[in-house]
Image 1 (tube, rainbow, N blue to C red):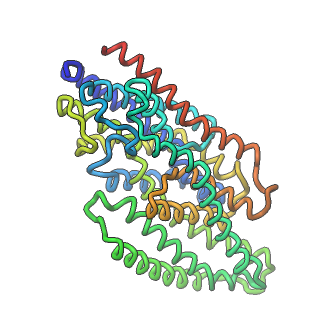
Image 2 (image 1 turned 90 degrees about the vertical axis):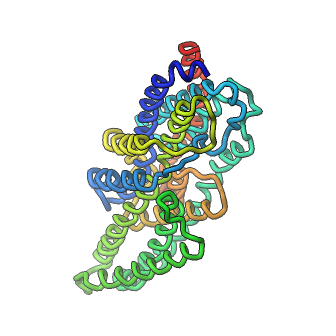
Length: 421
């Protein structure tokens, strides 16, 4: 308790700095990953993607990032083990943020799209096992994370494959692709509207007092989906097009329709992503502030101080703007060649997987979801369409993320402990 009262202000300041570094890493890696399909398909330029992400990620993080957030991320450790030594939990949270933030910076420099959730979970595991032992860890939840390495990409890849093949069958293989696009794309738009509203409701609105009942959430999603489909159909009907053009020109115009659709999906995904993943940066920071402010009391959740959420939101935006290009390049061009229709299939599949996971409690990584979806789109054109060298590097980076976070966290924990006692 003496350490908390003596060094409390310094510890909060250090936690704020490393929390900002972690948010920077989330922006550079996770947000860049979410924007990769839009850029790689040519629907958006990198500058446009960064501009959209800055607005909607910040809005999602700031407006719906949570007035109350779980301070001990994902329930990975039992905080009761630290009741008599709260300063050790403060050291651990700072170490975890620093370890995860540095690992994300390295991975982003390399262009590896890794899981920010797994980075921070690895950091928390590292200090917890070394400080109070393995009994403090909820190994069942850790096992769920290992399983998600396979389950999440597989589900997203399968859904992306089905969406892509349906578009091929209904539109691109039709005798007149543009007429088929006018007929079927509004249905895809409606489906996209339904999924994205559900994602936003489940991930983004609970913390602003709009925790809708399940039936009301689905009802609102269906209503907006119908509205989106009607607006989409009207907009497509107004497009001027030479009906006598060759089939290649039909393809080009169909892709322009999907490109327009991707701009909308990118905005929605950025909002939902910002509202959800900012917690990876501010959760441990909030834990430190809560413990210091309460003089050493440990709670599973706490009201956020007003400055914490903006700090995380600004960090995410700056990380994306200054360091996100490499991961965007990997997702958008490194795995397979994306067109707007393929990018749309991948993005819609990723959003659908997030909804499925929210409904079933399946632990997922948004990064692995989108990478799996992009692979699914590539597989639909055959294994030769995938850059297997890039795929191997990505999978290796996923395996390394958890132990890298754990080892770095333990090292930083020992250093901080030697400084403050």
